[in-house]
Structure formats: structure tokens, C-alpha cells
Length: 144
Image (cartoon, rainbow, N blue to C red):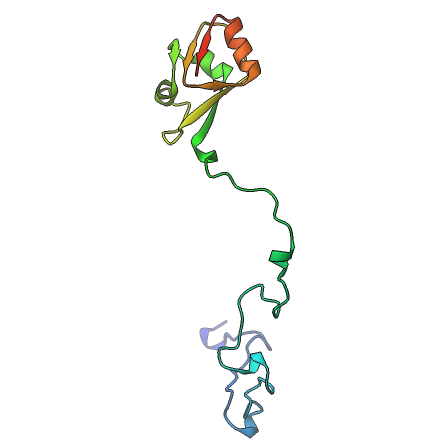
């Protein structure tokens, strides 16, 4: 094989259409656009999803669900995480310093996953019913 013998496969390339170059080219006069109508005119195309004035599909169908804009700022912590913390008074800052939450988190909730057997006091932290019961059973308290 030599560089001067390399060529694309047969039929893989086609010559560029030179439109509007006279009758003999096959694309003269109307330049392949046919006669009249929106698509024959300059600037005569429409936006994505346009259906000729009929109510478009994306407006006919019902919309369901949404994307929460605050989801990125809410964190969750397990009972097992609280058990492993070295401090007894726990707030948002203590959880961030321990590396359990990212720096952008603005609110946090304790979920009832794992066990807790030591007394902890939570300040400014929400908890699920099960997590609240487990913390209070271990002698802890939750102040929101």
C-alpha cells in the first residue's frame, strides 16, 4: 500500500451540488427547491418542533414532574454516621468539618439507617420519625 493509491471506497463520496447554474446542470432556475411555498423562499424555514401552525406536540402533551432547584443543597446523615462522630453537640458546621457533608449544603436531615447507642444533642438538624425515636431512646435530644 502506498499513500498515492489510497482512495475512498466506491460511492463513498459525491460531488458538491452547484445549484442555480443554468438549465444544463439539472439544478438551474428553481435550484432544486421546486415552485412556491415556504421552503422555496429565502429565510423560509421554521424552528424545531414547528408543525405548520398546528399545536405542536410539546405543547399538546401534559407536563409531569419537576426538577428541584434546592436538591443540591440538602444533605442527609445516618444514625451510623452520628455514632462515629467524636463530638456530642452536633450541628451543621460539625458535620461539615467531619467531612460528612459538602460545603454547599445548607440543611440536613438524619435518617434511621444504622444504630446509635450514645447520647448526642442535635441543633438545627431535622430527623425522620424513626431517627428521632432512636436518638431519644439513646438519651439524646433534638433542638430544631
